[in-house]
Amino acid sequence: MTKNPRQSAFLALRAVQRGAFVDVALDRELQREVLADLDRSLCTELVYGCVRQQRTLDALIDQLATKKAQQQPPDLRLILHLGLYQLRYLHHIPASAAVNTTVELAKTNGLQGLTGFVNGVLRQYTRLSENGQPQQTDPLQLPDDPVMALGMQYSYPDWIVRVWLEQFGWADTAALCQAFNQPPHIDLRVNRLRSSVAEVATVMQQAGIAIPPFPPLPDALRLLKPVGSIRQLPGFEEGWWAVQDASAQLVSHLLDPQPGETIIDACAAPGGKTTHIAELMGDRGVIWACDRTPSRLKRLQENVRRLGLTSIQVCTEDSRHIPQFANQADRVLIDAPCSGLGTLHRHADARWRQTPDSVVELAQLQTELLTEAATWVKPGGVLVYSTCTLHPLENEAIAQHFLANHPNWQIEPPAGDHPATQFVTPQGWIKVLPHHHQMDGFFMVRLRRSPES
Image (cartoon, rainbow, N blue to C red; front, side, top):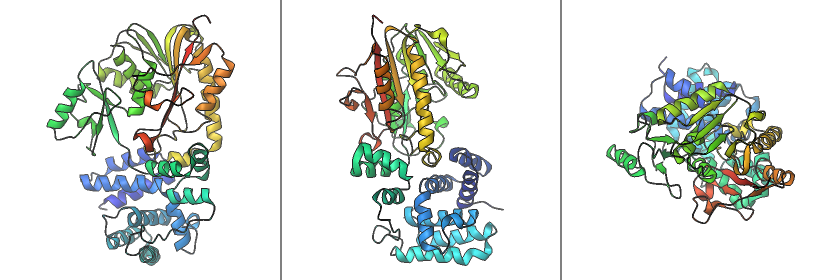
């Protein structure tokens, strides 16, 4: 059978429906079937888009069909998702092409007897949306409940909408939901031990790649368009740069490591922040990279080798239980495992995998990590706690609980000329919001231990 991008997308979505992570399922399908660049892009858009917009697409099926989406045969539901996604979100594809290719998809996958139903649902959507332009007349009927309406319109669980509404209000929550439904940007972090921002920008431009600096991060460059395989870009094999979002780069700058110090990265894999710390120190000093998962530490070691760093030592331990590090570190970083609600544009299925209960479990883990890692810091030393989530139980509540139980610690906001200064809140911690700053959503706080403690 000759595959096409829609068939490849269908097979990837079927794997996701059966429990696979969306990036793993897509990569597996793209490796199995070589597609032209445009087809590869379409397949990727369809897979990530259908997963992101799952709630909205299900709501449309509920309203257009006699059977609810959850009662439809699983393969039929996915095929309807693919057709409705193209009609609603991909306006460069003619409505007739979206309908016809989806009907063919049903035939190809053993649903010949339901092609009339597929055709009818999609054509009904097209009629209701006035030639496929939902901004004119939207076939999606939103419920009266405002939280449910926002969740259905932008495709999020109600509990995430509530968490953001309590923090940000209606306008910012809607803008945040929209931001996380856009494809993510890609930032590079230049390895100043091997190259320079100007040199990397020049070789990229010579290769026809637009990549301007991204202030306020001094080592950041932002790719403006999709470029295919990152590993094929100039300077990758030479270790001139690494892929790292600007928010993640900000974390190591907040830690502010100095040459000759002992640093511990408590949750180090896959190594983006660890290697950045080494670069900022001039690769002089000792960095302990801790993680309890050996396979993830292998990725860290690959990055260390490619970037040509020698100051990093690997520690395969659970950072909640490493008593031998007591009072050993000048600085400690805890980039804690979290719900990832600040990076939902990168992880399309995270909004459906996380739950309020999983957030409570993560907050307990984060508290244990912070309590243990604080014992590693020398008197007068620094600890940075960071997450890539926008949930107060994992962020502000963790910092407040720690300070309430550790009176010999205090928040230390960055100095006036620091890259993080523009993100500082009145409380002294840093909060990066994607819809305001065009960076991943992050929380970070720099804490200093009293010299006398």
